Image: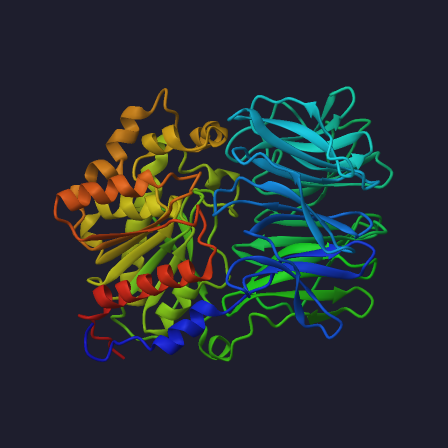
Length: 606
Protein backbone atom coordinates (compact mmCIF):
# COMPACT_ATOMS: atom_id res chain seq x y z
CA UNK A 1 0.00 0.00 0.00
CA UNK A 2 1.07 3.56 -0.62
CA UNK A 3 2.54 5.66 2.17
CA UNK A 4 -0.08 7.07 4.52
CA UNK A 5 -2.78 4.74 3.23
CA UNK A 6 -2.46 2.00 5.87
CA UNK A 7 -5.69 0.68 7.34
CA UNK A 8 -6.29 1.06 11.06
CA UNK A 9 -7.19 -2.57 11.85
CA UNK A 10 -8.87 -1.69 15.15
CA UNK A 11 -11.18 0.77 13.40
CA UNK A 12 -11.86 -1.72 10.61
CA UNK A 13 -12.96 -4.39 13.10
CA UNK A 14 -15.28 -1.86 14.77
CA UNK A 15 -17.10 -1.40 11.47
CA UNK A 16 -17.17 -5.10 10.59
CA UNK A 17 -18.01 -6.62 13.98
CA UNK A 18 -20.90 -4.37 14.96
CA UNK A 19 -24.00 -6.46 15.68
CA UNK A 20 -27.60 -5.87 14.66
CA UNK A 21 -31.10 -6.93 15.72
CA UNK A 22 -33.61 -7.74 12.97
CA UNK A 23 -36.63 -9.96 12.11
CA UNK A 24 -38.60 -8.73 15.12
CA UNK A 25 -41.67 -10.83 15.93
CA UNK A 26 -44.14 -10.59 18.81
CA UNK A 27 -44.85 -13.73 20.85
CA UNK A 28 -48.67 -13.93 21.15
CA UNK A 29 -50.21 -13.59 24.64
CA UNK A 30 -46.82 -12.62 26.09
CA UNK A 31 -46.42 -8.94 25.10
CA UNK A 32 -42.78 -9.69 24.38
CA UNK A 33 -40.92 -10.54 21.20
CA UNK A 34 -38.03 -12.34 19.56
CA UNK A 35 -35.48 -11.09 17.08
CA UNK A 36 -32.47 -12.44 15.21
CA UNK A 37 -28.90 -11.33 15.90
CA UNK A 38 -25.35 -12.59 15.29
CA UNK A 39 -24.14 -11.85 18.85
CA UNK A 40 -22.62 -15.35 19.09
CA UNK A 41 -21.03 -15.15 15.63
CA UNK A 42 -23.90 -16.64 13.63
CA UNK A 43 -27.63 -15.82 13.39
CA UNK A 44 -29.59 -17.00 16.43
CA UNK A 45 -32.95 -16.18 18.03
CA UNK A 46 -32.93 -13.73 20.95
CA UNK A 47 -35.38 -12.01 23.26
CA UNK A 48 -35.15 -9.49 26.14
CA UNK A 49 -35.13 -10.39 29.83
CA UNK A 50 -36.85 -8.49 32.67
CA UNK A 51 -34.07 -5.88 32.61
CA UNK A 52 -34.45 -5.50 28.84
CA UNK A 53 -31.10 -7.15 28.20
CA UNK A 54 -30.72 -9.57 25.25
CA UNK A 55 -30.86 -13.26 26.15
CA UNK A 56 -30.85 -16.22 23.77
CA UNK A 57 -34.36 -17.57 23.20
CA UNK A 58 -33.13 -20.94 21.93
CA UNK A 59 -29.81 -22.14 20.51
CA UNK A 60 -30.11 -23.71 17.06
CA UNK A 61 -27.44 -25.76 15.24
CA UNK A 62 -27.50 -23.45 12.20
CA UNK A 63 -29.13 -20.19 11.12
CA UNK A 64 -32.89 -19.80 11.72
CA UNK A 65 -34.50 -18.69 8.45
CA UNK A 66 -38.17 -18.70 9.55
CA UNK A 67 -39.67 -18.19 13.01
CA UNK A 68 -43.37 -18.79 13.74
CA UNK A 69 -44.75 -18.47 17.29
CA UNK A 70 -47.91 -20.42 18.08
CA UNK A 71 -51.21 -18.58 18.75
CA UNK A 72 -50.90 -19.23 22.51
CA UNK A 73 -47.21 -18.21 22.56
CA UNK A 74 -46.06 -21.51 24.09
CA UNK A 75 -44.48 -23.12 21.00
CA UNK A 76 -42.36 -21.95 18.07
CA UNK A 77 -41.77 -23.58 14.69
CA UNK A 78 -38.31 -22.71 13.39
CA UNK A 79 -37.01 -23.26 9.86
CA UNK A 80 -33.26 -24.03 9.89
CA UNK A 81 -30.99 -24.76 6.92
CA UNK A 82 -27.56 -26.40 6.71
CA UNK A 83 -24.45 -24.29 6.01
CA UNK A 84 -26.30 -21.80 3.87
CA UNK A 85 -28.00 -24.28 1.48
CA UNK A 86 -31.47 -22.71 2.10
CA UNK A 87 -33.02 -26.18 2.48
CA UNK A 88 -35.05 -25.37 5.57
CA UNK A 89 -36.01 -28.21 7.89
CA UNK A 90 -38.71 -27.64 10.49
CA UNK A 91 -38.16 -27.86 14.24
CA UNK A 92 -40.55 -27.36 17.15
CA UNK A 93 -39.48 -25.46 20.24
CA UNK A 94 -41.46 -25.95 23.46
CA UNK A 95 -40.64 -22.85 25.50
CA UNK A 96 -42.14 -24.12 28.76
CA UNK A 97 -39.95 -27.24 28.77
CA UNK A 98 -37.05 -25.64 26.85
CA UNK A 99 -37.12 -28.49 24.36
CA UNK A 100 -36.30 -28.44 20.64
CA UNK A 101 -37.37 -31.40 18.51
CA UNK A 102 -37.69 -32.26 14.84
CA UNK A 103 -41.12 -31.54 13.33
CA UNK A 104 -40.56 -32.12 9.59
CA UNK A 105 -37.24 -33.20 8.12
CA UNK A 106 -36.17 -34.31 4.66
CA UNK A 107 -32.64 -33.02 4.23
CA UNK A 108 -32.55 -33.14 0.44
CA UNK A 109 -35.68 -31.04 0.04
CA UNK A 110 -36.78 -27.44 0.51
CA UNK A 111 -39.57 -26.43 2.89
CA UNK A 112 -41.37 -23.07 2.75
CA UNK A 113 -43.02 -22.41 6.12
CA UNK A 114 -46.59 -21.11 6.13
CA UNK A 115 -47.89 -20.69 9.66
CA UNK A 116 -50.02 -22.03 12.51
CA UNK A 117 -53.70 -22.87 12.28
CA UNK A 118 -55.91 -20.63 14.47
CA UNK A 119 -56.35 -23.40 17.08
CA UNK A 120 -52.60 -24.10 17.19
CA UNK A 121 -52.97 -27.77 16.24
CA UNK A 122 -51.55 -27.67 12.71
CA UNK A 123 -48.74 -26.03 10.81
CA UNK A 124 -48.65 -25.44 7.04
CA UNK A 125 -45.74 -25.62 4.63
CA UNK A 126 -44.84 -26.49 1.05
CA UNK A 127 -42.07 -28.79 -0.14
CA UNK A 128 -40.58 -30.08 -3.40
CA UNK A 129 -40.49 -33.77 -2.41
CA UNK A 130 -42.54 -34.95 -5.40
CA UNK A 131 -40.29 -33.29 -8.00
CA UNK A 132 -37.46 -30.71 -7.63
CA UNK A 133 -39.41 -27.92 -9.37
CA UNK A 134 -42.86 -28.67 -7.86
CA UNK A 135 -43.95 -27.42 -4.45
CA UNK A 136 -46.95 -29.20 -2.97
CA UNK A 137 -48.74 -27.87 0.12
CA UNK A 138 -48.90 -29.89 3.36
CA UNK A 139 -50.15 -29.52 6.90
CA UNK A 140 -48.59 -31.28 9.87
CA UNK A 141 -50.42 -32.03 13.12
CA UNK A 142 -47.99 -30.67 15.68
CA UNK A 143 -48.84 -33.11 18.50
CA UNK A 144 -48.59 -36.31 16.44
CA UNK A 145 -46.30 -35.08 13.58
CA UNK A 146 -48.76 -36.64 11.15
CA UNK A 147 -48.42 -35.03 7.69
CA UNK A 148 -51.24 -34.52 5.21
CA UNK A 149 -50.92 -33.25 1.65
CA UNK A 150 -53.61 -30.66 0.93
CA UNK A 151 -52.85 -29.81 -2.70
CA UNK A 152 -50.33 -30.46 -5.43
CA UNK A 153 -48.86 -27.76 -7.64
CA UNK A 154 -46.53 -28.20 -10.59
CA UNK A 155 -44.43 -25.11 -9.85
CA UNK A 156 -43.51 -22.78 -7.03
CA UNK A 157 -46.11 -22.38 -4.29
CA UNK A 158 -45.92 -21.00 -0.75
CA UNK A 159 -48.58 -21.01 2.00
CA UNK A 160 -48.71 -17.56 3.61
CA UNK A 161 -51.18 -17.97 6.47
CA UNK A 162 -54.42 -19.63 7.58
CA UNK A 163 -57.74 -17.90 6.98
CA UNK A 164 -59.60 -20.26 9.31
CA UNK A 165 -59.37 -23.95 10.23
CA UNK A 166 -60.49 -24.96 6.73
CA UNK A 167 -58.64 -22.53 4.46
CA UNK A 168 -55.10 -21.44 3.72
CA UNK A 169 -53.92 -18.34 1.88
CA UNK A 170 -51.28 -19.37 -0.68
CA UNK A 171 -48.99 -17.51 -3.06
CA UNK A 172 -48.16 -18.77 -6.57
CA UNK A 173 -45.52 -16.80 -8.52
CA UNK A 174 -46.44 -16.24 -12.17
CA UNK A 175 -43.24 -14.51 -13.28
CA UNK A 176 -40.13 -13.05 -11.70
CA UNK A 177 -42.25 -10.18 -10.29
CA UNK A 178 -45.93 -11.12 -10.66
CA UNK A 179 -47.85 -13.55 -8.49
CA UNK A 180 -51.33 -14.77 -7.67
CA UNK A 181 -52.84 -15.16 -4.20
CA UNK A 182 -55.53 -17.78 -3.55
CA UNK A 183 -57.77 -19.00 -0.78
CA UNK A 184 -57.27 -22.79 -0.66
CA UNK A 185 -59.83 -25.15 0.89
CA UNK A 186 -57.69 -27.83 2.53
CA UNK A 187 -60.49 -30.42 2.27
CA UNK A 188 -61.83 -29.92 -1.25
CA UNK A 189 -58.60 -28.40 -2.72
CA UNK A 190 -60.75 -25.66 -4.30
CA UNK A 191 -58.81 -22.46 -4.99
CA UNK A 192 -60.33 -18.96 -5.07
CA UNK A 193 -58.17 -16.29 -6.69
CA UNK A 194 -57.93 -12.81 -5.17
CA UNK A 195 -57.84 -10.12 -7.86
CA UNK A 196 -58.05 -10.40 -11.64
CA UNK A 197 -56.70 -13.43 -13.46
CA UNK A 198 -56.28 -11.88 -16.93
CA UNK A 199 -54.01 -8.95 -16.02
CA UNK A 200 -50.55 -9.83 -14.62
CA UNK A 201 -49.80 -7.90 -11.44
CA UNK A 202 -47.92 -8.02 -8.19
CA UNK A 203 -49.93 -9.14 -5.16
CA UNK A 204 -48.24 -8.91 -1.76
CA UNK A 205 -48.82 -8.83 2.02
CA UNK A 206 -52.42 -10.13 2.16
CA UNK A 207 -54.12 -9.39 5.49
CA UNK A 208 -57.35 -11.19 6.38
CA UNK A 209 -60.20 -9.81 8.45
CA UNK A 210 -61.45 -11.70 11.51
CA UNK A 211 -64.86 -12.00 9.85
CA UNK A 212 -63.16 -14.15 7.11
CA UNK A 213 -65.28 -12.27 4.56
CA UNK A 214 -62.29 -10.57 2.94
CA UNK A 215 -59.22 -8.53 3.66
CA UNK A 216 -56.54 -6.22 2.32
CA UNK A 217 -53.74 -6.70 -0.18
CA UNK A 218 -50.99 -4.69 -1.84
CA UNK A 219 -51.10 -4.75 -5.64
CA UNK A 220 -50.05 -2.78 -8.71
CA UNK A 221 -52.97 -4.00 -10.84
CA UNK A 222 -53.54 -1.31 -13.45
CA UNK A 223 -50.91 0.98 -11.90
CA UNK A 224 -47.15 1.51 -11.85
CA UNK A 225 -46.71 1.16 -8.08
CA UNK A 226 -48.09 -0.98 -5.25
CA UNK A 227 -51.21 0.39 -3.56
CA UNK A 228 -53.52 -0.76 -0.75
CA UNK A 229 -56.74 -2.46 -1.86
CA UNK A 230 -59.66 -4.15 -0.13
CA UNK A 231 -61.41 -7.31 -1.37
CA UNK A 232 -64.24 -9.64 -0.36
CA UNK A 233 -64.55 -13.37 -0.99
CA UNK A 234 -68.07 -12.76 -2.30
CA UNK A 235 -66.49 -10.89 -5.23
CA UNK A 236 -62.76 -11.69 -4.90
CA UNK A 237 -61.97 -10.41 -8.40
CA UNK A 238 -63.05 -6.87 -7.47
CA UNK A 239 -60.45 -4.74 -5.74
CA UNK A 240 -61.32 -1.47 -4.04
CA UNK A 241 -58.36 0.92 -4.10
CA UNK A 242 -57.97 2.55 -0.69
CA UNK A 243 -54.56 4.20 -0.56
CA UNK A 244 -52.07 4.99 -3.32
CA UNK A 245 -48.94 7.07 -3.68
CA UNK A 246 -48.48 7.19 -7.44
CA UNK A 247 -44.69 7.50 -7.34
CA UNK A 248 -43.82 4.99 -4.60
CA UNK A 249 -44.61 1.42 -3.53
CA UNK A 250 -46.27 0.54 -0.26
CA UNK A 251 -43.88 -2.07 1.16
CA UNK A 252 -45.30 -3.85 4.24
CA UNK A 253 -48.74 -4.12 5.81
CA UNK A 254 -49.72 -5.25 9.32
CA UNK A 255 -53.18 -5.08 10.93
CA UNK A 256 -53.75 -4.16 14.60
CA UNK A 257 -55.40 -6.85 16.76
CA UNK A 258 -58.69 -4.88 16.95
CA UNK A 259 -58.52 -4.17 13.18
CA UNK A 260 -58.83 -0.41 13.72
CA UNK A 261 -55.42 0.36 12.21
CA UNK A 262 -53.15 -0.81 9.44
CA UNK A 263 -49.45 -0.04 9.95
CA UNK A 264 -47.67 0.24 6.63
CA UNK A 265 -44.37 1.35 5.14
CA UNK A 266 -43.87 3.50 2.06
CA UNK A 267 -40.70 2.98 0.04
CA UNK A 268 -39.59 6.48 -0.98
CA UNK A 269 -36.65 5.70 -3.23
CA UNK A 270 -35.00 3.32 -0.77
CA UNK A 271 -36.02 5.14 2.44
CA UNK A 272 -38.96 3.78 4.48
CA UNK A 273 -41.72 6.05 5.75
CA UNK A 274 -44.03 4.65 8.42
CA UNK A 275 -47.77 5.38 8.18
CA UNK A 276 -50.95 4.43 9.99
CA UNK A 277 -54.15 3.94 8.02
CA UNK A 278 -57.67 3.83 9.52
CA UNK A 279 -59.88 1.77 7.17
CA UNK A 280 -63.17 2.91 8.72
CA UNK A 281 -62.52 6.62 8.21
CA UNK A 282 -60.10 6.36 5.26
CA UNK A 283 -57.64 8.61 7.16
CA UNK A 284 -53.89 8.24 7.25
CA UNK A 285 -51.27 9.48 9.69
CA UNK A 286 -47.52 9.84 9.12
CA UNK A 287 -45.29 8.78 12.02
CA UNK A 288 -42.55 11.37 12.41
CA UNK A 289 -39.18 11.23 14.09
CA UNK A 290 -37.86 7.95 12.71
CA UNK A 291 -34.28 8.19 11.37
CA UNK A 292 -34.04 7.80 7.59
CA UNK A 293 -33.49 4.12 6.86
CA UNK A 294 -35.25 0.83 6.17
CA UNK A 295 -38.19 -0.37 8.28
CA UNK A 296 -39.11 -4.06 8.30
CA UNK A 297 -40.83 -6.75 10.39
CA UNK A 298 -43.73 -4.77 11.83
CA UNK A 299 -45.45 -6.75 14.60
CA UNK A 300 -48.24 -5.61 16.95
CA UNK A 301 -47.68 -6.10 20.70
CA UNK A 302 -51.27 -5.11 21.56
CA UNK A 303 -53.97 -2.78 20.26
CA UNK A 304 -51.88 0.29 21.18
CA UNK A 305 -48.27 -0.66 20.43
CA UNK A 306 -46.29 -2.24 17.63
CA UNK A 307 -42.61 -2.97 17.09
CA UNK A 308 -40.43 -2.87 14.00
CA UNK A 309 -36.81 -3.34 12.89
CA UNK A 310 -34.93 -0.26 11.70
CA UNK A 311 -31.66 -0.13 9.79
CA UNK A 312 -30.04 3.12 8.69
CA UNK A 313 -26.62 3.90 7.17
CA UNK A 314 -25.34 4.59 10.71
CA UNK A 315 -27.58 2.21 12.73
CA UNK A 316 -26.83 -1.38 11.62
CA UNK A 317 -30.15 -2.62 13.05
CA UNK A 318 -32.27 -2.39 16.19
CA UNK A 319 -35.84 -2.91 17.35
CA UNK A 320 -38.12 0.08 18.00
CA UNK A 321 -41.62 0.50 19.44
CA UNK A 322 -44.40 2.97 18.65
CA UNK A 323 -47.39 3.76 20.87
CA UNK A 324 -50.60 5.05 19.25
CA UNK A 325 -51.92 6.68 22.43
CA UNK A 326 -48.75 8.56 23.41
CA UNK A 327 -47.51 8.97 19.81
CA UNK A 328 -44.04 8.16 21.11
CA UNK A 329 -41.19 6.15 19.62
CA UNK A 330 -38.88 4.09 21.83
CA UNK A 331 -35.71 2.24 20.86
CA UNK A 332 -35.98 -1.14 22.59
CA UNK A 333 -32.54 -2.56 21.75
CA UNK A 334 -29.11 -0.96 21.42
CA UNK A 335 -27.33 -4.01 20.03
CA UNK A 336 -26.01 -2.09 17.02
CA UNK A 337 -24.89 0.97 18.96
CA UNK A 338 -21.33 1.96 18.06
CA UNK A 339 -19.76 5.24 19.12
CA UNK A 340 -17.38 5.21 16.16
CA UNK A 341 -20.06 4.51 13.55
CA UNK A 342 -22.42 7.06 15.12
CA UNK A 343 -19.63 9.62 15.03
CA UNK A 344 -17.99 8.80 11.67
CA UNK A 345 -20.75 7.08 9.67
CA UNK A 346 -22.04 8.90 6.63
CA UNK A 347 -25.64 9.28 5.50
CA UNK A 348 -25.89 9.22 1.70
CA UNK A 349 -27.12 11.93 -0.59
CA UNK A 350 -29.74 10.86 -3.17
CA UNK A 351 -28.56 11.87 -6.64
CA UNK A 352 -29.72 11.19 -10.19
CA UNK A 353 -28.09 11.21 -13.59
CA UNK A 354 -29.22 10.83 -17.18
CA UNK A 355 -28.16 7.60 -18.85
CA UNK A 356 -27.43 7.02 -22.55
CA UNK A 357 -31.12 7.25 -23.51
CA UNK A 358 -31.97 10.14 -21.15
CA UNK A 359 -33.44 7.78 -18.57
CA UNK A 360 -33.19 9.31 -15.10
CA UNK A 361 -31.28 6.87 -12.86
CA UNK A 362 -31.09 7.39 -9.06
CA UNK A 363 -28.17 6.53 -6.81
CA UNK A 364 -27.03 6.95 -3.23
CA UNK A 365 -23.78 8.92 -3.00
CA UNK A 366 -21.56 8.52 0.06
CA UNK A 367 -18.61 10.85 0.63
CA UNK A 368 -16.87 12.48 3.58
CA UNK A 369 -16.34 16.12 2.67
CA UNK A 370 -16.15 17.59 -0.81
CA UNK A 371 -12.57 16.82 -1.77
CA UNK A 372 -11.90 16.24 -5.46
CA UNK A 373 -9.97 13.43 -7.13
CA UNK A 374 -11.08 10.80 -4.65
CA UNK A 375 -10.95 7.11 -5.53
CA UNK A 376 -14.47 5.73 -5.92
CA UNK A 377 -16.29 2.41 -5.71
CA UNK A 378 -19.63 1.61 -7.35
CA UNK A 379 -21.66 -0.91 -5.32
CA UNK A 380 -24.25 -2.73 -7.47
CA UNK A 381 -27.24 -4.45 -5.80
CA UNK A 382 -28.49 -7.93 -6.68
CA UNK A 383 -31.83 -9.21 -7.82
CA UNK A 384 -31.75 -7.88 -10.49
CA UNK A 385 -35.10 -6.73 -9.11
CA UNK A 386 -33.45 -5.61 -5.87
CA UNK A 387 -32.90 -2.05 -4.71
CA UNK A 388 -30.08 -0.17 -3.03
CA UNK A 389 -31.56 1.29 0.15
CA UNK A 390 -30.52 3.58 2.97
CA UNK A 391 -29.24 0.89 5.32
CA UNK A 392 -25.95 -0.05 6.95
CA UNK A 393 -23.20 -1.54 4.79
CA UNK A 394 -19.86 -1.98 6.60
CA UNK A 395 -17.78 -1.97 3.41
CA UNK A 396 -19.37 1.24 2.13
CA UNK A 397 -19.02 2.99 5.47
CA UNK A 398 -15.40 2.01 6.05
CA UNK A 399 -14.36 2.88 2.49
CA UNK A 400 -15.91 6.32 2.96
CA UNK A 401 -14.11 6.60 6.31
CA UNK A 402 -10.87 5.81 4.43
CA UNK A 403 -11.45 8.67 1.98
CA UNK A 404 -13.29 6.92 -0.85
CA UNK A 405 -16.46 8.06 -2.53
CA UNK A 406 -19.06 5.29 -2.95
CA UNK A 407 -22.09 5.22 -5.26
CA UNK A 408 -24.89 2.66 -4.85
CA UNK A 409 -27.06 2.96 -7.98
CA UNK A 410 -30.56 1.73 -8.76
CA UNK A 411 -30.04 1.13 -12.46
CA UNK A 412 -32.93 0.24 -14.77
CA UNK A 413 -34.57 -2.99 -13.65
CA UNK A 414 -34.43 -2.04 -9.97
CA UNK A 415 -37.43 -2.31 -7.69
CA UNK A 416 -39.10 0.73 -6.12
CA UNK A 417 -39.56 3.03 -9.13
CA UNK A 418 -42.61 1.57 -10.82
CA UNK A 419 -43.48 -1.40 -12.96
CA UNK A 420 -42.15 0.05 -16.22
CA UNK A 421 -38.74 0.83 -14.71
CA UNK A 422 -38.62 -2.68 -13.23
CA UNK A 423 -38.98 -4.27 -16.67
CA UNK A 424 -36.47 -2.07 -18.55
CA UNK A 425 -33.69 -4.67 -18.37
CA UNK A 426 -35.68 -7.81 -19.20
CA UNK A 427 -34.24 -10.41 -21.58
CA UNK A 428 -32.63 -8.79 -24.66
CA UNK A 429 -32.48 -5.41 -22.85
CA UNK A 430 -30.06 -6.95 -20.34
CA UNK A 431 -27.00 -4.93 -21.31
CA UNK A 432 -28.81 -1.58 -21.09
CA UNK A 433 -28.48 -1.76 -17.31
CA UNK A 434 -24.74 -2.44 -17.64
CA UNK A 435 -24.49 0.60 -19.90
CA UNK A 436 -26.15 2.59 -17.10
CA UNK A 437 -22.97 1.92 -15.10
CA UNK A 438 -20.84 3.46 -17.86
CA UNK A 439 -22.91 6.64 -17.63
CA UNK A 440 -22.77 6.61 -13.84
CA UNK A 441 -18.97 6.70 -14.11
CA UNK A 442 -19.28 9.77 -16.34
CA UNK A 443 -21.54 11.44 -13.77
CA UNK A 444 -19.24 10.65 -10.84
CA UNK A 445 -16.35 12.26 -12.69
CA UNK A 446 -18.28 15.27 -14.01
CA UNK A 447 -20.49 15.99 -10.98
CA UNK A 448 -18.39 14.85 -8.02
CA UNK A 449 -14.87 15.11 -9.42
CA UNK A 450 -13.80 11.55 -8.53
CA UNK A 451 -10.48 10.27 -9.83
CA UNK A 452 -11.22 8.75 -13.29
CA UNK A 453 -8.20 6.46 -13.01
CA UNK A 454 -9.21 4.90 -9.68
CA UNK A 455 -12.79 3.66 -9.88
CA UNK A 456 -13.64 0.20 -8.60
CA UNK A 457 -16.83 -1.84 -8.80
CA UNK A 458 -18.34 -4.52 -6.58
CA UNK A 459 -21.60 -6.45 -6.30
CA UNK A 460 -23.25 -9.56 -4.88
CA UNK A 461 -25.32 -12.21 -6.71
CA UNK A 462 -26.79 -10.55 -9.82
CA UNK A 463 -24.71 -7.56 -8.76
CA UNK A 464 -21.74 -9.88 -9.26
CA UNK A 465 -22.88 -10.48 -12.86
CA UNK A 466 -23.05 -6.69 -13.29
CA UNK A 467 -19.47 -6.41 -12.02
CA UNK A 468 -18.22 -9.05 -14.46
CA UNK A 469 -20.25 -7.60 -17.35
CA UNK A 470 -18.93 -4.10 -16.64
CA UNK A 471 -15.31 -5.30 -16.40
CA UNK A 472 -15.56 -7.24 -19.67
CA UNK A 473 -17.72 -4.91 -21.78
CA UNK A 474 -16.27 -1.60 -20.50
CA UNK A 475 -12.75 -2.69 -19.49
CA UNK A 476 -11.14 0.76 -19.62
CA UNK A 477 -13.39 2.32 -16.96
CA UNK A 478 -12.19 0.34 -13.96
CA UNK A 479 -9.19 -0.03 -11.68
CA UNK A 480 -10.39 -3.10 -9.70
CA UNK A 481 -13.45 -5.32 -9.17
CA UNK A 482 -14.97 -7.54 -6.47
CA UNK A 483 -17.53 -10.22 -7.43
CA UNK A 484 -19.49 -11.98 -4.64
CA UNK A 485 -21.52 -15.10 -5.61
CA UNK A 486 -21.88 -13.65 -9.11
CA UNK A 487 -23.05 -15.12 -12.42
CA UNK A 488 -20.42 -15.53 -15.15
CA UNK A 489 -22.74 -17.01 -17.81
CA UNK A 490 -26.55 -16.81 -17.71
CA UNK A 491 -26.84 -20.05 -19.68
CA UNK A 492 -24.82 -22.16 -17.23
CA UNK A 493 -26.48 -20.47 -14.25
CA UNK A 494 -29.97 -21.29 -15.56
CA UNK A 495 -28.92 -24.86 -16.38
CA UNK A 496 -27.48 -25.47 -12.91
CA UNK A 497 -29.62 -23.37 -10.56
CA UNK A 498 -32.43 -25.02 -8.59
CA UNK A 499 -35.19 -26.29 -10.84
CA UNK A 500 -37.77 -24.46 -8.72
CA UNK A 501 -36.11 -21.15 -9.67
CA UNK A 502 -35.38 -21.67 -13.37
CA UNK A 503 -38.76 -20.77 -14.88
CA UNK A 504 -39.08 -17.60 -12.81
CA UNK A 505 -35.52 -16.50 -13.59
CA UNK A 506 -36.14 -17.08 -17.30
CA UNK A 507 -38.92 -14.49 -17.14
CA UNK A 508 -36.21 -11.97 -16.30
CA UNK A 509 -33.10 -13.16 -18.16
CA UNK A 510 -34.54 -14.84 -21.24
CA UNK A 511 -35.04 -18.56 -21.80
CA UNK A 512 -32.73 -21.46 -22.51
CA UNK A 513 -35.00 -22.40 -25.43
CA UNK A 514 -34.80 -19.05 -27.24
CA UNK A 515 -31.87 -17.04 -25.94
CA UNK A 516 -28.77 -19.24 -25.73
CA UNK A 517 -27.09 -17.35 -28.57
CA UNK A 518 -27.75 -14.03 -26.81
CA UNK A 519 -26.41 -15.44 -23.53
CA UNK A 520 -23.23 -16.42 -25.36
CA UNK A 521 -22.82 -12.96 -26.86
CA UNK A 522 -23.04 -11.12 -23.53
CA UNK A 523 -21.49 -13.73 -21.17
CA UNK A 524 -18.64 -12.29 -19.08
CA UNK A 525 -17.09 -15.78 -19.21
CA UNK A 526 -16.69 -15.47 -22.98
CA UNK A 527 -15.09 -12.02 -22.67
CA UNK A 528 -12.95 -12.70 -19.60
CA UNK A 529 -9.73 -12.12 -21.54
CA UNK A 530 -10.69 -8.43 -21.89
CA UNK A 531 -10.45 -7.75 -18.15
CA UNK A 532 -7.50 -5.42 -17.56
CA UNK A 533 -7.64 -5.00 -13.78
CA UNK A 534 -7.36 -7.13 -10.61
CA UNK A 535 -10.48 -9.10 -9.65
CA UNK A 536 -11.36 -10.65 -6.28
CA UNK A 537 -14.07 -13.35 -6.25
CA UNK A 538 -15.96 -14.82 -3.26
CA UNK A 539 -18.50 -17.67 -3.26
CA UNK A 540 -20.25 -20.08 -0.88
CA UNK A 541 -19.80 -23.78 -1.64
CA UNK A 542 -23.45 -24.55 -0.78
CA UNK A 543 -25.06 -21.85 -2.94
CA UNK A 544 -28.29 -23.27 -4.43
CA UNK A 545 -29.18 -20.05 -6.29
CA UNK A 546 -25.95 -19.24 -8.12
CA UNK A 547 -23.88 -22.46 -8.13
CA UNK A 548 -20.23 -22.06 -7.12
CA UNK A 549 -19.22 -23.27 -10.58
CA UNK A 550 -20.11 -19.78 -11.89
CA UNK A 551 -17.15 -18.34 -10.01
CA UNK A 552 -14.82 -21.29 -10.52
CA UNK A 553 -15.14 -21.26 -14.32
CA UNK A 554 -14.51 -17.51 -14.48
CA UNK A 555 -11.41 -17.72 -12.30
CA UNK A 556 -10.03 -20.74 -14.16
CA UNK A 557 -10.31 -18.93 -17.48
CA UNK A 558 -8.67 -15.78 -16.16
CA UNK A 559 -5.79 -17.72 -14.61
CA UNK A 560 -5.25 -19.50 -17.92
CA UNK A 561 -4.65 -16.04 -19.43
CA UNK A 562 -2.35 -15.00 -16.52
CA UNK A 563 -4.79 -12.31 -15.40
CA UNK A 564 -4.75 -11.06 -11.82
CA UNK A 565 -7.57 -12.84 -9.98
CA UNK A 566 -8.12 -14.28 -6.48
CA UNK A 567 -10.86 -16.65 -5.33
CA UNK A 568 -12.07 -17.47 -1.80
CA UNK A 569 -14.70 -20.21 -1.42
CA UNK A 570 -16.45 -20.49 1.93
CA UNK A 571 -17.13 -24.19 2.56
CA UNK A 572 -19.83 -23.53 5.18
CA UNK A 573 -21.82 -20.81 3.39
CA UNK A 574 -24.40 -20.61 0.62
CA UNK A 575 -25.74 -17.59 -1.23
CA UNK A 576 -25.41 -15.39 1.87
CA UNK A 577 -22.36 -14.93 4.08
CA UNK A 578 -23.80 -15.46 7.56
CA UNK A 579 -20.96 -16.55 9.85
CA UNK A 580 -18.98 -13.78 11.52
CA UNK A 581 -15.56 -15.26 10.69
CA UNK A 582 -16.46 -15.46 6.97
CA UNK A 583 -18.06 -12.01 7.06
CA UNK A 584 -14.81 -10.63 8.49
CA UNK A 585 -12.66 -12.48 5.95
CA UNK A 586 -14.68 -11.30 2.97
CA UNK A 587 -15.11 -7.66 3.97
CA UNK A 588 -11.56 -7.26 5.30
CA UNK A 589 -10.12 -8.63 2.05
CA UNK A 590 -12.45 -6.43 -0.01
CA UNK A 591 -11.46 -3.25 1.81
CA UNK A 592 -7.73 -4.04 1.72
CA UNK A 593 -8.03 -4.96 -1.98
CA UNK A 594 -9.66 -1.65 -2.94
CA UNK A 595 -7.31 0.34 -0.70
CA UNK A 596 -4.31 -1.28 -2.38
CA UNK A 597 -5.50 -0.92 -5.97
CA UNK A 598 -7.36 2.39 -5.84
CA UNK A 599 -5.58 4.43 -3.19
CA UNK A 600 -1.88 3.96 -3.94
CA UNK A 601 -1.72 6.37 -6.88
CA UNK A 602 -4.40 8.81 -5.74
CA UNK A 603 -3.66 12.37 -4.70
CA UNK A 604 -6.79 13.85 -3.14
CA UNK A 605 -7.31 17.56 -3.80
CA UNK A 606 -8.98 19.82 -1.26
